[in-house]
Length: 95
Image 1 (tube, rainbow, N blue to C red):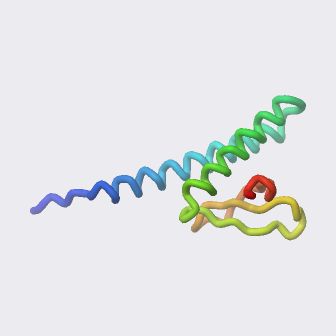
Image 2: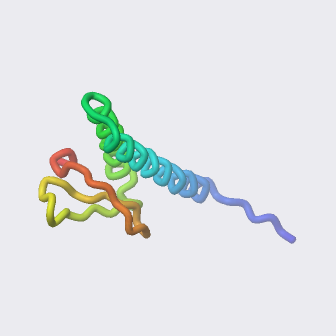
């Protein structure tokens, strides 16, 4: 039985997939925290969420989908491809 070795690019792709899920998880946790606190803590939690989503959009565009929010026109919805759960992100921060 022959051993199959993964190429370097295949390893990187696997790491990128894990990293994208980790970033989305961080954004979701920050969003959940932001909804339960007030003041500076809320702003900080939303900033953590925004930075995680920004990194996903800018550095892993092939793994994300961006769509306009019909109701909140100043926001877009960022989600990982193949999922149906996204998070709001200020559209102005994409420019």
